[in-house]
Length: 220
Ligand code: ADP
Ligand code: 5GP
Image 1 (cartoon, helix red, strand yellow):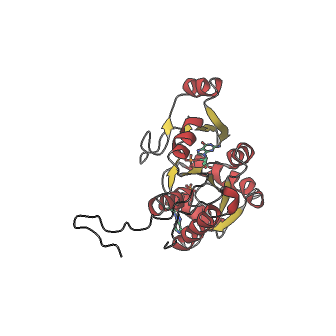
Image 2 (cartoon, rainbow, N blue to C red):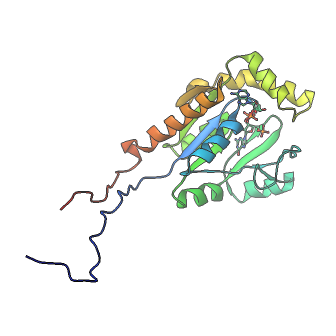
């Protein structure tokens, strides 16, 4: 029989199970005012395994927006240079302005082992799916056109001309919902966030994202 000498360390706890998997892009699209930004923020707050890809845009900032946090606001010439240097994973003209995702933004987040939340339009969504076939595409739908208009006006960040353009474009955008992997109606916000979180969690554990490698948890 062996006894433990004084000063011996107590038996180690078994290691925490560790799982290796590939990070993936989570694309959130939908018409303006539907609640994409609100849902994305909640997802980022509640799920520490996600991070936000800050887009570059030529649109002027709204009074509540911060450069570098909401967007990287750039002049037209600067955007041209990014396109020329092939620094963007995708870009598109949306509601009359250019918006794009830096390749470096995706790389920084994935190399930290996190999933990349992208609030981008349907053109961007389709491009990302082509470059990253394992991307998860989530389309946010309004409960009705009336509610969409109320939210867009209630946000009070855009003038009448901008609101009208965005409402007109919404009709076209909604036709793309079926091309997305998942559709979530944003009626009750908490329910919509729960639905998006469940989609992300289910996708995360899908075996196609790499073989989970559990650490040894057996007792011998
Ligand atoms: P998007 O990013 O799609 O343009 P926002 O996230 O800016 O939309 O939301 C537009 C407005 O609607 C905001 O004022 C937001 O607070 C509000 N909103 C978002 N989701 C809901 C919801 N489920 N119920 C009521 N208001 C909402
Ligand atoms: P907003 O001006 O309301 O912030 O955004 C307008 C639209 O541009 C939204 O549909 C938003 O998802 C989209 N958008 C924001 N960033 C990007 C991006 O990097 N690429 C693309 N393709 N669309 C973007």
